[in-house]
Image 1 (cartoon, chains in turn blue, cyan):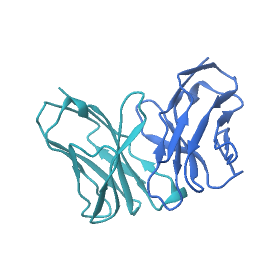
Image 2 (spheres, chains in turn orange, cyan):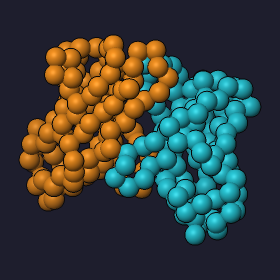
Image 3 (cartoon, chains in turn orange, red):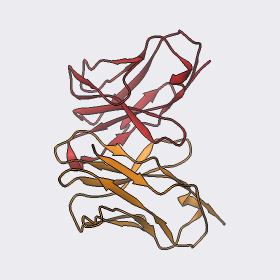
Length: 112
Length: 113
């Protein structure tokens, strides 16, 4: 079945550091890929998405590129801020499916 | 613009008690979902619905029931609460399949003692 594997956390960075959170997936066909962010005490919010190979999703300085050849969708940000501290979830939805499959989440803490 | 609203935000139940977690969305989305989030385990799908009157089981449906009498509402019922149901519960909705993505509620933190 479909699955998503994220790098284990937690991840701790200093402000202005470069961020990469790895995400790989297993799915049949051509899934849509998502990154969600969960701030403390809140629900998940869609951060960015990509619906076909080589698409780049971007939002709030975060980027991720849909790489079909490596079945990956790594999240990157060039310079993190304290306000980026949150849990980040990678997810996929297979074509025609009404369900999202989530990774386990990666907790990011950014220190000033 | 309320989006997805969940109530209550917090609840403590005793073993064997029952309760209903409420979820309402005002976006006219056909698809609605219930997830539970356990520490370090990501989100597990409990039940979902593709429209009023239609529900289906997810990965972890045991101990829960749902109904979908209207497009807006998708309540989750716990009949006999057990400590294993201590978790954070999230409701979500979506307008379509594939690349649509979800809108989440802010969650209900449930503790069963």
